[in-house]
Image 1 (cartoon, rainbow, N blue to C red):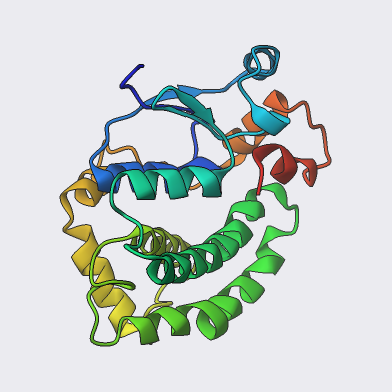
Image 2 (image 1 turned 180 degrees about the vertical axis):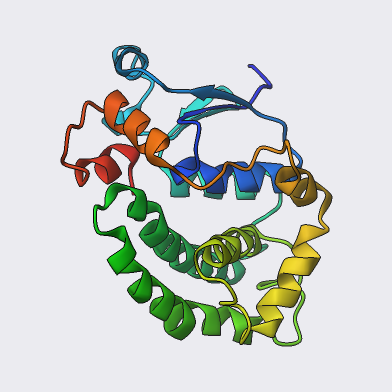
Length: 231
């Protein structure tokens, strides 16, 4: 069984970025294969590597895994970043899925011709629906669940930084989350991930979008992209 962890995706954030974050937090080194051509994707299909024909693909412990939530849960369980009992795990999963829902709104912007018009709604939902939940959970607490680092903490760090990229000053009214960011940023694995030359990907650009559309042979129906990259 190979000990290498190999991630196959595009050279950008998308659905793989949360997986990169979690592996970095766990201190796990990984290699990446970046898709740039339609032929690479078709070969993965012909080799039977993609269950449901979707990305991202993570090779770990002799398995070829797809479905990002399943992958995140596997890594969290393997590296002690999940709950210690069913109650903790379900709380972590609720937080994680809420954060993923909100990050998906930001991820989708690159494929939408009217992206600017979507920003006020994303900002409003962040301030009114999502951030207040985490601000309250972090009142007097270092971590979201169980008093230790978990998947939920990692995703909150990722999501809060994504929001700050789009909306300057969005955390002004959420001091607990801002303090949480400072603590998380001192974690060795996260610090290495975020520093220049680290494995965190930049915000997606036109070149990234064109690569994704070329690999999936999508001409103009950007709505087909999320299905192939899987929710």
